Image (tube, one colour):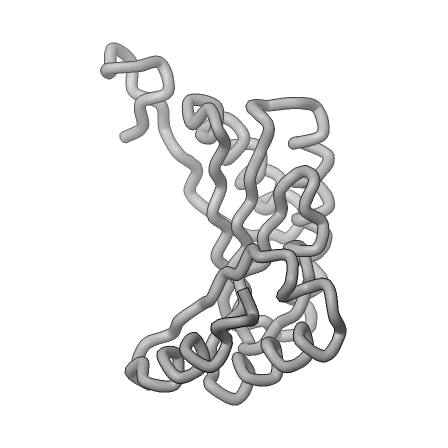
Length: 154
């Protein structure tokens, strides 16, 4: 929580400058008051540390859209292929297309779900959509027949 922000900010300031770091905060108090939220994002920008954007159902405050470096890290928490997962991915494709058009240097998209067996399927959907809508040539996961589980990837 922001109650320990001094320790957090001091720790982040001690990190090596030759690596790119991103910070994910989830405590609601980081987002509840404007002055605390602004201090967090200002400090991250000063330290050249990115802010993880967390997209999870029920926590819209963590989907803050603050870019503190010219890179973005999205942590997407799906709902085991609920129809809203696809709609949310479509919105992210449009957002990433916008950022790429604005000169974003790198995009990291971490897909995961409570039932990880469904993550690869939604990842394939996202990659196909990004390739089509943004004109990228991303490689999608490939499923292996006869692997330990149906969702085994190669």
